Image 1: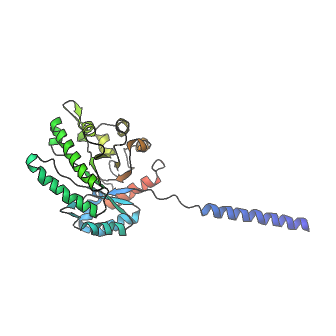
Image 2: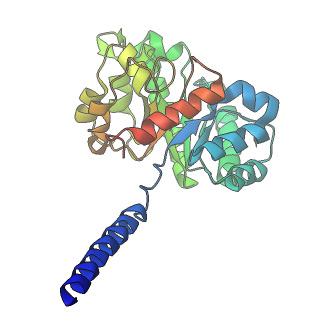
Length: 288
């Protein structure tokens, strides 16, 4: 009789152990969501028609911060800096970065340009923004090395103003910066002739590839200069043809602090496209 009882007891203990182990496995906390940002240019039409509703959708799908593309006259998407910040905060995100800028002024327009930047920087500081990024140069920056140097001097001056306000300034590339002017690649000249203490670079991974260059080569040549990344594909991130794995594997060398989704061509609605882009990055093992 005791043997039967011991057998039943042993079986009960085994079953209990299985249930406990299963419970432990099922109670293992999920991996924390990755800190993926969104460049709001990706949903620019939605922001024009319903900024509040669009921010709510972006926050609900799991983005952790936004980069604006709607600054003008001291406001963001027509809202006061603190109001736009409050909207972003209320939806579980951080207003981290912003695209804006001006074409390089001549000597006669320098003072007016610097005054514009003073207003711009004050608005961004009020909104708690940590990065201001200029995403363009006019023709001056593509026609001669003297013109590129003018932009270098301009960016250094603006970067100094931003730094004094506790904001980091940077430049965002397209593909035109990878052509040669007077025997030098424009992007390389910008990197060599801007002060790293004043100017960082937001590298657009898609556009540099379109320009015929490998981002990793630039990470190795100019380590630490690429504090922000635009993660972009032909359409949705992950839809191809970009191979992001070797790029992300060299993130530390680049100096990357944050990566930001940008979608400019769509296989779906813009909102669905940025959601699919987020899902790809959240599921990619090589993305930290």
